[in-house]
Length: 190
Image (cartoon, rainbow, N blue to C red):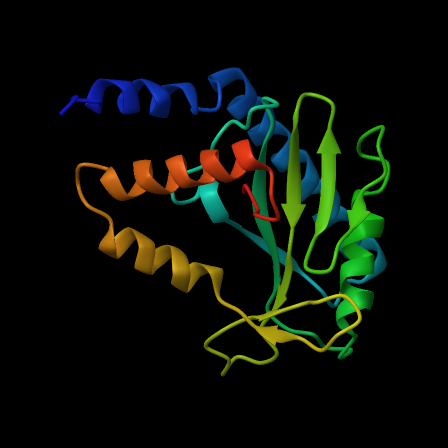
């Protein structure tokens, strides 16, 4: 039987997002956060956004797709919803905050606001709310629907807890994501 370990390790290396792109993403994310904080301070001072990177960048399984693109998921959290606004309204405010930060128009998706960058990446901004101090889990804003209980932090903590020290779980999930990207079916590659 052939030993393909070296081939898989090389493939894993080929899937890595280049350092220059990771640095650009970090700068763009910082600018988005500043823009959102400023917008809410000026237009909706009762809402103070905090942020938490989630998804593949947080658990180290982000890949560079066959089109040399990648993304970052940065949750926009509000510790309270004092005016009890709807999901669409809260997402709309985040959309308004990031409008004009790039040449392309942000996309108001069902579960996030997406900002595309010409450098081959996008930043997804899901909006989450803790409705009161007693909530142990945030609720995700879903466009034209009620808030849904969702806790990306809990998923990340569990993934980190079960992953092995050799990184095999991360490599396997990266390989599956690459296969999904290769097939380009209705799978997400984030």
